[in-house]
Length: 408
Length: 200
Image (cartoon, rainbow over all chains, first blue to last red):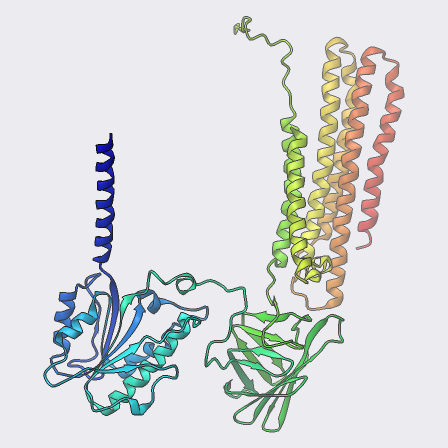
């Protein structure tokens, strides 16, 4: 009995050890995104034929790219994965707005989503004779131009400056800005630059929640850095991603880069001498605010829209994800996608939103009303049917069954 | 069994409605649940059509239950006293009349309902349409419910008449008077419905 116990425990410990050893050798795949400023035959966009690329295959690929001895700059994240590249927020923007446009300035894109230990391949091929890696570490505020010694030919940028409280999205966007900035700087200086964006480890295990979900976020989210579509003065908050103004059958002007003034009313001044004023009142119905009028001044000409039906109770904001089109005589102001406004707001956050499209619309309510009537009738009928009792006073399970002979 | 189904149904609706109302109330949006908004925004055609449907539907239900009650009694009593068969068919005719009231009202109401432009362009016309729709709904509901209970009543009385006639044939004529009074109720409903409709 004791022997079998020893055998069992030995077996278990061996299995445990094997598990640990195997997981230590488990292969981790990291995406690699490479682009060059000059390419042999352009434009090349290499689509990988295999799902995963082993370290040796990657060494071969790299050898081809390094034939012309370009200036190599490697941007190495701590963690990266395919999910980071494919992540999109509500508005369809990805986490790498600059990298998306890189094909405009670069030739020869190579994207390999699953490569085993890519950095090892780089260290295997490089540095060539007389060269040395020039390491750059990112500080909180990016890097200054002086820190980048432009005469070096091998750059290794460590993008490992994540802080504990920073959102991964913001981190990636920041790195994206740094990458594009540095690449454009080097591309100006050198003719042939190979840029590589990869990581030490895959981020899929530590990645969780919202990066792969496209979910409508019901709670208020903070504006992203550099998002200029929010306007606010002391009292009023407005979020309008795109505002398009059409005056008197002329061309449509997209309003951007406005500065906010005004105390009670929200006055936004745009370049080209255009001001838009939103004026509110809360005397119509007590407890509610309403947008009374929108006045647009273009070069001393004033246009007003007076019958705007935007309103909500105090402490609540008005939100519309369809386009809001404000029509006046000779003037149309079109606000696309994601319009949210709240006057008399305390603080910098919107209150809960009253949407322009209700949750239960009128047709839904009508349908519910009629279906409730039908269901009452059905339940009534169901109750009656279940109440039918068949006559079983003369039933005798042990007696003779009745036979009816059919006569001619 | 009947009560179990009914109590499950009512309980479910009560919990659902209570939950929804409490959510809106406790998040400060109580005024978002607005019956006035529902009555103003719903289509008048829905109300009119529902009224017409309920009119004929409910009256026919009343007539059907009445005929069921009376018919069963006549057939049962006719086994022992076959003489009651012909005379007692008059109860069935009274029940049928109730269904005819509902049918006529429904046809009259349908005649006043016509599909026009559904966009709200003129407030005056829209308010007239809503008035007409509510009147149609009300008249249909009125006639339907009145004829429902009238049919139930006439059926019960007719059933009693058949059985007592089988026992003692001199009773029938007296009981017929009761049935006439029961039938008059249905007529009240018809009059009110037609009077409401004349205002459209």
